[in-house]
Length: 150
Image: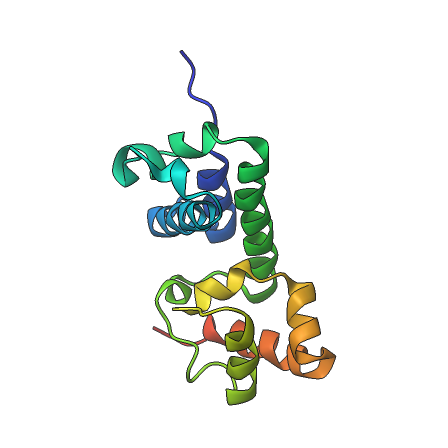
């Protein structure tokens, strides 16, 4: 039997430019958590290792729940196309990258633990939250992260 392509794995590879297990697993965990927040009972008897990280969990979902994952993937692609991929995004805090104003606006809507969590926010929502001028600064600050030498 032929293996189906894993859209989350494919998205992580597209974003990173090569297979990136750290990004792939982060995307899968984040999408699982978002889906479970909406429909907690889908987590029953699910193994993170055997179901979520392999992608099998997402294949069994109803289209409406798969839509949550698709929206997050689309936002992630847009985000990283705009600012560039850097593995630093997975763990780096917002402080020291974004302005206090930008952070306060983000915190009104979401509670990100790292810069990567910003990848799930629609760019239209960023413009609406901050206004066009501040949103432009936001994107420039994020783009600068990848230019920092590790």
